Length: 120
Image (spheres, rainbow, N blue to C red):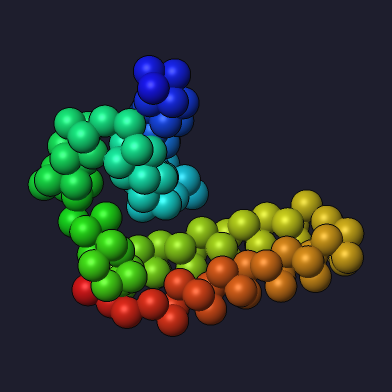
């Protein structure tokens, strides 16, 4: 039981730190890491899970996702900008056409999913 908890707490803490870093680093996503942290904490530490879910800054995006599968307009715009920058950098660096096509397909699918979600 103790080992199982550690196997979830450690990745949860890493995801939490990555999510917090994402607040300050423009191309690092925040909410996906917070969702991963909430998932890991839900399987390992009720105290950490409750703290994260009820945190005044970090909790609301998780609560909106869990309750409605919703993503804020601000997050959608930030994700779109990050995808645009990522693809632009690939173009500037001269990535092979085959990889650009794969990247375009994957990023388009991600954007279609994000923009199909309800907003809060």
